Length: 338
Ligand SMILES: NC(=O)c1ccc[n+]([C@@H]2O[C@H](COP(=O)([O-])OP(=O)(O)OC[C@H]3O[C@@H](n4cnc5c(N)ncnc54)[C@H](OP(=O)(O)O)[C@@H]3O)[C@@H](O)[C@H]2O)c1
Image (cartoon, rainbow, N blue to C red; front, side, top):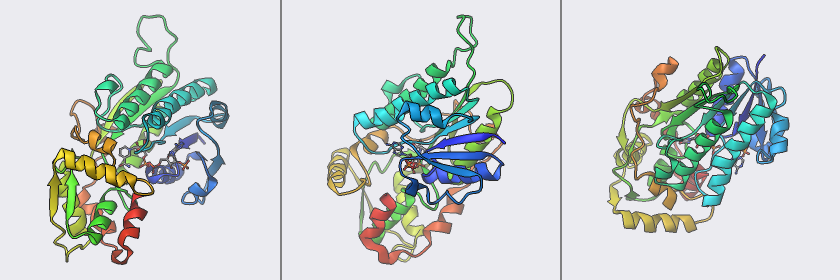
């Protein structure tokens, strides 16, 4: 039975990945900062939870003893440039070193649409830049993409799949749920980046692509690939906000008026939201990410190349947005944002 270490396995996508890996017959281990964070997955048969600081390279290397494959889902959406660097660049670099030390066969790294390991500096936000630097660190440290050229370097022995999803929706998302919860409280919806485009993808499809990539990593010689994971339709952010309200029954299904904010007002709004306690609903860095449309480039393979087809948001979102949480008020907004 192949053994997979899933970093970030306790999170929104990670829980689906763990469930699918267990179903597919893998033995799964999940390092976490706090064992209590793993309560949603600890019941899965054949899954082991390890309390471990993944930033400690010695502990990370130990956690990879006897491991055949690694999935990395660790990320942050908000933070300082230093924390983005630590989580999105330095951690992948440590993962690559630990994989080489332990002879791990394949790494599946979940990155983000809109970044590129070749040109991270041209990305518009700290989030996307650091994600691109993380991809580059994995590529370089594992010996890709020039592993088989004539430079006389040692051939890469650890394969790498980089998956770049657009924004992810699903029952526990912090995206459609947050927009729905906000509109249950406020009569109008001031929105920065209203025209920004997204191609939302279902969490089950992303998790399926991770598992497919793990399985492929064990067939044939080690190789590297990058996939863009997007849903079947492109939406403007304004449409998604309206859809979230309508599908969750806000205003008897009519939703709320959405008022597009000019960039400077969006920045003021982001600063104010950032001052509220807890994780912000929207940060200045998120706004910067939206300066580039979050849609497939068309130059890279996607679900089809993995033998999958993405599900439609319009078919899935009503199944969870319709559940009645109208009594939650602002608590509902904070709950979904965390
Ligand atoms: N959600 C989206 O819409 C979206 C869109 C595009 C790309 N992605 C990418 O998909 C991947 C999974 O996203 P997600 O939404 O599932 O994330 P998530 O729910 O926030 O989970 C991330 C996991 O990473 C761990 N983690 C967080 N901060 C950490 C830190 N400072 N040090 C160590 N571990 C830390 C946490 O595990 P513990 O608490 O157990 O330690 C957490 O379970 C990420 O790479 C993300 O960038 C997500």
